[in-house]
Image 1 (tube, rainbow, N blue to C red):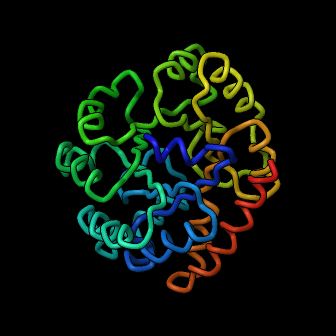
Image 2 (spheres, rainbow, N blue to C red):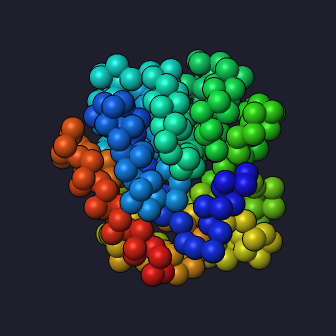
Length: 258
């Protein structure tokens, strides 16, 4: 919890997402280290899954590439263990319920603790069902991040009162992916949260340009970007690291201006 608090302390946070194992677990390791050096405040690491219901085509394809390349949950944990020898950047896993149950809930959370994963984001776990994982998260010190969306309505303030770490604000309906226009609904969501809690709000889904990032940072505490980065990885493959690093540096500067 302390490291998550530091992510937002005195600054606007930039949170990049990548899919672990795309294009390889070795490149993922380099990306985590280099994105941290380029200013990423928290890194969201997607665990590849064959049915990622919240993801658009870009991240679906990344999951398929990673799985085809042989990445496993164990290889992701091993990679983070290596990272932790030189880098203490906060990490949040983006995963679905099925991979966690298939691996074993307690074993999964215990391993998260051992490699210093700070948080979990589970898009297909409704807030009302969070007790499926919460006892293990509390036991091993992993923060379970709550998500809100424009359709959350009256639930937004209830979720805000009970949420921990930060709130993931989904900027628009549908799946992840780059968008030309971000809905104004997200500004109202943040306002509703702040009426009842000072928990940080980070906005994700659809943000891809420095201009969009700066606009979101005007009223939010952090900005999450995934598909635009995964698209760079898809384009450059094993040569993607310097291109991703330059993008992260540019987006971090934009968020800082917000």
